[in-house]
Amino acid sequence: MQHTEVDHLVVAAATLAQAAAWAEATLGVTPQPGGRHALMGTHNALLGLAGSVYPQTYLELIAIDPEAPAPGRARWFGLDDAALQARLAAQGPELVGFVARSSMVDMHRWGLINAHFQPGPILSASRETPEGTLSWKIVVADDGRPLAGGAVPTLIQWTGPHPATRIAPSGLDLTALTVRGLPDLAHQVLRLRPLTRAALPGPALEATLATPRGPVTLATHVA
Image (cartoon, rainbow, N blue to C red):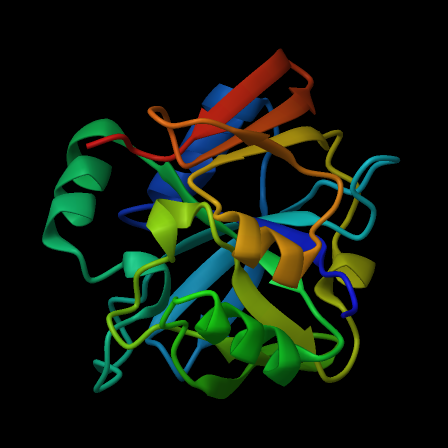
């Protein structure tokens, strides 16, 4: 089975203004505008992360779009979760998961099903950019929440240009990624590399970034 690759990290925020302030204070950089996701009623801002360890990778700052209609289903990355939204309002942006790039997303989705997960259907999504439309297929669980608390990545397959080619260098570099709670069978299905697996307890996902402010480690919430 073909391997998957780390595509991007996802940091949720109460608003994109909050996300930008957090990025400037925590990472020492200003994100660039992304766009709106009509499918999910969300919008985003972006920061490039591409380096020697994880090429063609970026950081997505995402929030519910207050001007968009409700999507009629659970939003991706658990954004409808009331506890998450309360933490975002009180404590600021939070790493909620990561996305793995696949060239055979249907095959990897079935692999996760065989690994006893319920990854959800394959959805077609897009957003408009000044350079044109970005389009992709993405696997989103029916409840919208990342699998295994974020240890199992959301699967994506781009059907056109990759957004990393349109993101300006940010001075950030993803240097390490650690997951806790990724079962052996799912690990064998995804063949995600490079990746460090650690034992629970602890955050399901930790990402270490080289930034203008020095090394910064982001982690998912531990209940």
